[in-house]
Image 1 (cartoon, helix red, strand yellow):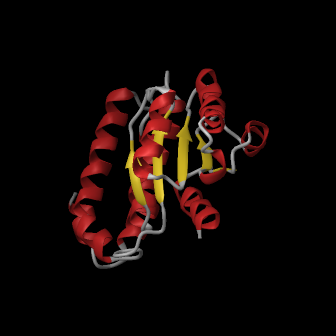
Image 2 (cartoon, rainbow, N blue to C red):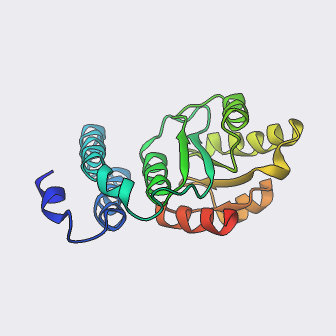
Length: 192
């Protein structure tokens, strides 16, 4: 946390999160996938990132997007998938950019996405899946949006390691984002 304190004021909070905390967390994820780090290391890194973001909250509140709401986003990891770190980074970056973000967690029952979108009058729903076995959940949420007559009013962004631009097109999502920075850029393209 000393590094975050030292960096405060030297760069915008969004940049510190994107180029520092999120970049570090992404590297931890790569090392974990390669078997160089283990789950306790990932959890410690995630806790450190959360603490770093907490230290930057005041700056985020007064920085880019402060006082304005670019759109309402519901973001979560689909049912059957307990991965949370990448989705949490995306939620943080979207919030920092000025979006109202409702992060509904991980292993989220598909109907909960629909219910939350109705509750907050969402403009966009973000669907994360980090396992090929849970990708289908992204498609199922889109089908539920259609069944509930909501699809025309809500944009859909998908992400996660097995997701691709081709997958997004195949299931009728509006876009695919590979990382948090891209998620912010694409959310702005879709909603502004």
